[in-house]
Image (cartoon, rainbow, N blue to C red):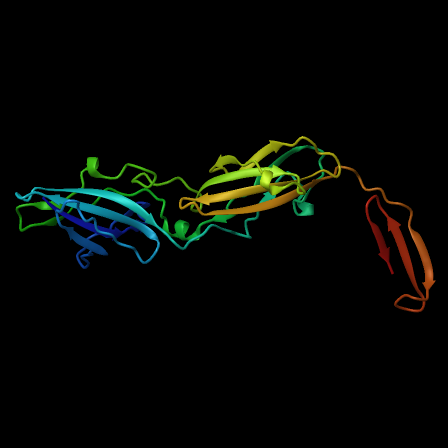
Length: 279
């Protein structure tokens, strides 16, 4: 028996929206980034290869017998030692049921049902821009040996990769994120008591809180996870107050000697929570 092992860096096809090995064209005959023949020993000394950049890599094993009968098998690896999950400030995490005039920080409608949205807030830019989690196309047959065999380098479906998390079907994701987790509690509570719930690939959640009394507040956490296990969390706080403002009668002090001008005056009025002064 003879074994040969090769590695290709996959490319993304805009036409077919999938990943594939570089194609042979009339002007380009690509070669693998790594290839090594494996000596038949006991035990077999399996080759190793470390890519120099993140990407999806196709690993193809060729097996031949003495009569030159050949079969090929393929497996996929996502290699990434550098990327991370980040947040996009232009797409903030916020409470959609809170008042927009308060920058979504105060819920003033008296209800205790809230909706938290984090649409397009989290991203793994390297995975998203590189389309690393896209489906993978069937292998394009190639190679001839002078006419006796045409396109003999072919990977039969039964020897292709449909196993594990990284396979031909790709991985469901949003912006390179494969799962979101959600938690909430009082802003003053110990964060070690957070109870995370799985939101899969939903970018919003709606829940009913135990209270919406004036002065009640709640902090909400979202944690994004990519396929490498990298995580990034973010929070938003919502305050509840449905009471109308109560403004007292203004008080006017004339001709103050300690103002900006010798004859300046000051007007004071007080609402339920704040004191305002003009001078």
